[in-house]
Length: 264
Picture 1 (cartoon, rainbow, N blue to C red):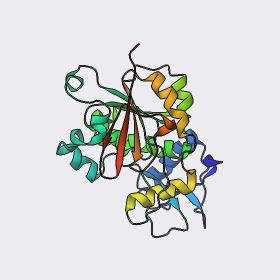
Picture 2 (cartoon, one colour; picture 1 turned 45 degrees about the vertical axis):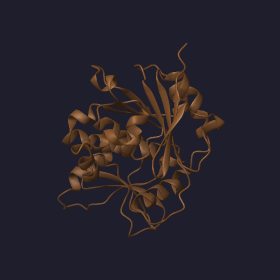
Picture 3 (cartoon, rainbow, N blue to C red; picture 1 turned 90 degrees about the vertical axis):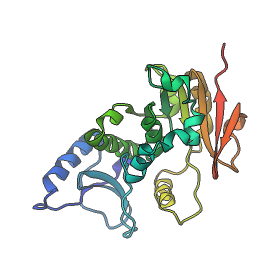
Picture 4 (cartoon, one colour; picture 1 turned 135 degrees about the vertical axis):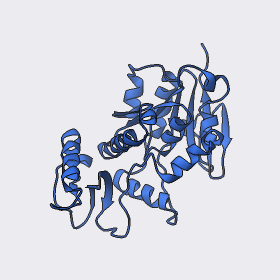
C-alpha cells in the first residue's frame, strides 16, 4: 500500500531542527497515516528535514529528495517578471482580457497536479486553483508545499486548495464552487535521464506508475467545467480518450489540447 512508506526524521536529537522536525513529522503521521521509523536501507521513504517534507529513494544516495516548493527561485523569478501570462498554459485555460479584469478569480481545477508547478503558474497570474490528488504520498507533499508557501506568501497560498481523492470521482460528485476550467496533465513515461525534472518524474513513475486511466478523466471534466478542459500532451501523443479538441496551443515539447464546453 502506498501509504505504508516509512516517515523518517532526518535530524537527530540535539540538532537545531530536531524538535521542530519531530513536531512536523508527528503532524504528518497523524494526518496521513505514515509510521515514523528509522531510515530504511533500500526503497522509498518520506523524510522531514529542516522543516520540509521530501520523498527519497534510499538506493539513490546522490539524488536529493523530491519536494514541493511553490516558492522556488525559478518560480518566483518567473512570477516577478510577468512571464506567467505569456506561457501557453495560461492562454490555454482562458485567462485573458475580460477574465483578468473580472472581480472573481478564474477557478481552475488541476486534476493531475504532480509537484504543483503548473498550479503555481496559474495561481501567480491570479487564478484560484484546486488540486485533486489521489496518492496520499503526493498529497502530503503538496500539503507541505502549501504550508510553507503560507509562511512566505500567504496571499498566494490562499488561492491554492487541495483535495485528496480520485479525480474522476471528485469531479463527478463535485459539490464545491463553480469551476471555470479544468487542467489535465496525465503522467507519461519519461525516457530521457538528463534533466533534474526528469529525475523527479522518474522517481514518481517508479513509485506510482503512469496514469493508465487518464482517458476516464475527460468525460467528468467536460461535465463539470463551465468553460473548458485543457489537456497537456507530448507533441507526439494521441489525443485523450480519442476525442479531438476544439483547438490546440503548441509549445516546443508539448501541446495543450483545449476542449471548449458546448453551450446548451
